[in-house]
Length: 227
Ligand code: CDP
Ligand code: CDP
Image (spheres, rainbow, N blue to C red):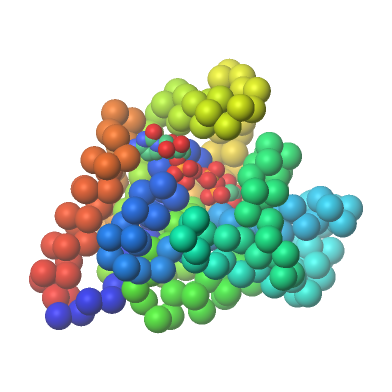
């Protein structure tokens, strides 16, 4: 029986990908890889260094001298950019609202995908993003596509912000989510798309545990069949 497989989890912003991906990875003792964190880290560095997010060549120059490590720790995944921890810095509103511009560039994606495929080579991975099942690991043994209504996704982010003590505007969050979904879905290179062989789960009225259980059932079915 094949024990170490790749689980690809894709979907739009705040569909619950990273939360459930972490739970699944823990249950299976697999490595969790958050590909969005890689695009966020590059966006953060470009903003900090005053590099135009629209200029692919400048971004590529920056990326070639950039190391992004995703480290597993007891407190969760740590993001290390050029040796310095940026786990929280890459989650600001400024980065969130601009990351999709960086992720549109074909060459940037090409380099990121190359790095992501190296991380997935060993299997025993749960990877989340937008193009994992369609492009990064097209031969992933399990592919999941998570969706939820815009209202639900904005409410989740709103709650998260309030819990962290940040100010938050639900209508603004809805607009930002719609805008990011649109850029991610309409870009030319590997857009956000459900892979033909992905299992779609609408998480709108499901709890985190319910979603994780559904995915684990798909994984165990696959492992039991030993394909
Ligand atoms: O967690 P959230 O859904 O807000 O976003 P994320 O997973 O951190 O991804 C941030 C952005 O990176 C997305 O909106 C995409 O523009 C880009 N991204 C991508 O293009 N491809 C991926 N595999 C992962 C993220
Ligand atoms: O990674 P992605 O952007 O897809 O979403 P996330 O960061 O995992 O989830 C966004 C928020 O929704 C988190 O605060 C989760 O706790 C919450 N969530 C939820 O309330 N119900 C779910 N079924 C999934 C996530």
